[in-house]
Image (cartoon, rainbow, N blue to C red; front, top):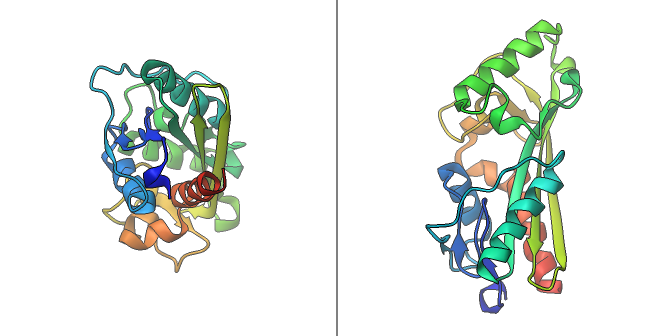
Length: 210
């Protein structure tokens, strides 16, 4: 099992063989719920600097973060990057999801901008508010080899925020696989169908088969 492998979960999103490096409390919870039973998770090195996420796509940012931690620790490293892709906005905010409203934007700032942009382009009906969350997880090893997994969930952007759980765009994302609740209203039910949960479970399967 993965617990007995040489992996150490390290990276801007999580840390490999036993480490968790993200400082995003929401991601920590989702990662632990998805694969915590397969790994002994601990914090990443405290002196590990943040990685500049300037790649043009999710795959590139996940690779940048995992490669940086791998180089710093000499260990296999895994990281993830996630984006919300809204059809009416030509795929935005996409790779810029975390900083859609600016470099220091809060979750509320990003949600407010998203709803404003949908209103600006006249996307008011559900069929015009289709979107998806996509997560890419990347393992980078000291020998230069890589392993990637991806998870996607389709949904609709609601007219306003609903629910107090989750983080990021969860209050306005209603998954098509669900029962009409937003991710922020779903609690632990979210992890069964979430993009990150799917990606991490796919990664776990790939690691078992590697």
